[in-house]
Image (cartoon, rainbow, N blue to C red; front, side):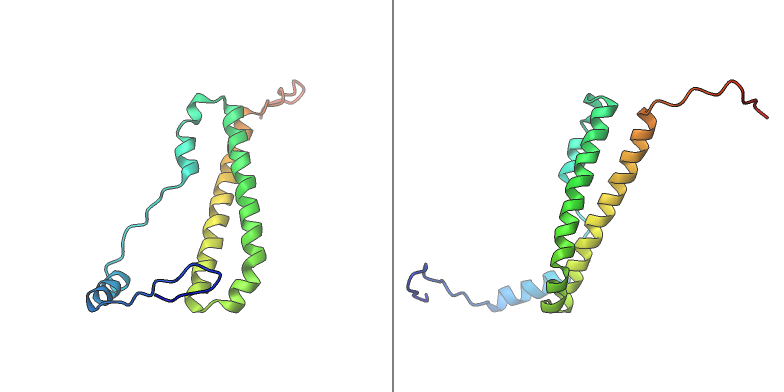
Length: 130
């Protein structure tokens, strides 16, 4: 234990041989399937209980939230790139790409749904079909 003044004491741990083997097995082991647990997708399962307009509104809100998150990540980008090592920069860039991809995907879905519920103009009676 490390005793500190004005802060809680620290417990100091060391890695055992067994722990070291387990650590390297985890980071060098077989690739694992990506776990896709996105809370918004769970919410969207229940959009069937909303009107099309309400569901489109929820998509719009999520697009806005992801846009804000992306702006925060992009603002942190210069510091992350300057201070992170190669591995940290890779993780940061991956997070930015994932948030951007979700935002763009949801935005396209929002546009599709909005177009489906928008009133279409009445056909012009003076135009003849070819």
